[in-house]
Length: 267
Picture 1 (cartoon, one colour):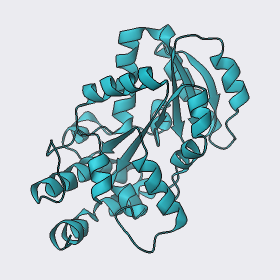
Picture 2 (cartoon, helix red, strand yellow; picture 1 turned 120 degrees about the vertical axis):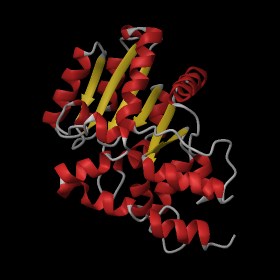
Picture 3 (tube, rainbow, N blue to C red; picture 1 turned 90 degrees about the horizontal axis):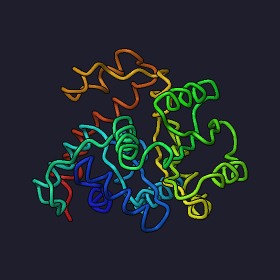
């Protein structure tokens, strides 16, 4: 538990932008992952025993992230209580909610302001072909330079991507990966297993979960009011219960998790 909580990025969204760009400029590649409380429950990330090989691998991948960004009010609350109850040492008691749906568009916007459209190259990998086309169209309409796309049901074509990248020099090459399932986090596994190629092609990778579907407007964001009161997940449950029921039930596990890992656990 401690290793994951202390790995979380605990600064503001603007500081995250600054540090991610700095890391990329220094090393020419970086991997950014996101984690939310439902995922901690589904992948049994706090458990030490009886874990499957994929669960063990997934936890190792998250701990090796260049940046692990916190997503959602449930994780914010758990982290806050862990700090208050002295289960972790942290400089900030309250985390910023750096969910991918908000943070990645913010990161792209800030990067575009600093460097201009032509200095950003976007590669998209994930979702269904028809949704991917809509996401590409939306991003191009916003002025972004999308140079390669591949749906999540096919293999990433490194040769084609390399040819597209070779046409640009001194650019920030951003790969948005959106390949997730309720049980297996395919995007993180894919990123880990292609780490050398990511380095070789000098990519800044964001494992973004369902971001491309939101960009394509296939999945709609909750109205601003619901987001302001930190109830976006509840709104999604009401509008799309089949897709969101399990995630909400996992998030509600925060109550037994608080007792098990923060109050009753002896360390």
